[in-house]
Image 1 (cartoon, helix red, strand yellow):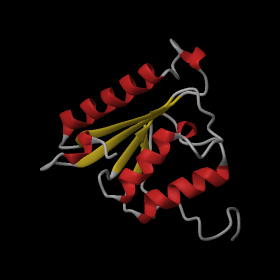
Image 2 (cartoon, one colour; image 1 turned 30 degrees about the vertical axis):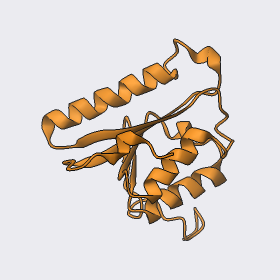
Image 3 (cartoon, helix red, strand yellow; image 1 turned 120 degrees about the horizontal axis):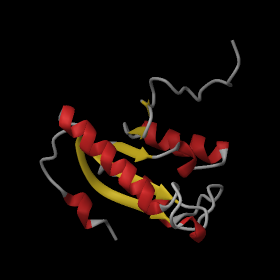
Image 4 (cartoon, one colour; image 1 turned 180 degrees about the vertical axis):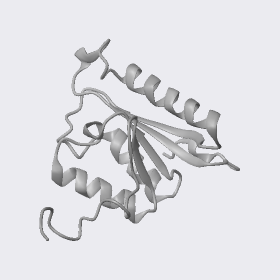
Length: 142
């Protein structure tokens, strides 16, 4: 079932998806809790919208008590489907490890994001895919 929030029309700026993940239920009050991650990302969007027409949050995707090594997370799968359907063009995460703790899975996710003209940003920096990250050659080769 498609996320009804993603059916928005006439959005100025980016169509933003928030992705949140915790590895365990015990992260309730920690900086990695779903609540803390979401607050940080919403604050980032508010701050960037004050300076310019940054965008609108059109979706929130979360996986609670899920390993970053697992590619079968419902929230991650739904996020990537939204990327493929061009419902979002920017994914925000607090840290890239929220997406994956597996290099192979991270490469697969970032390839899907890049092929679909989407970008990934963290709270502290951004990765414009297709411009900075090139997975076509081995890392460290000259």
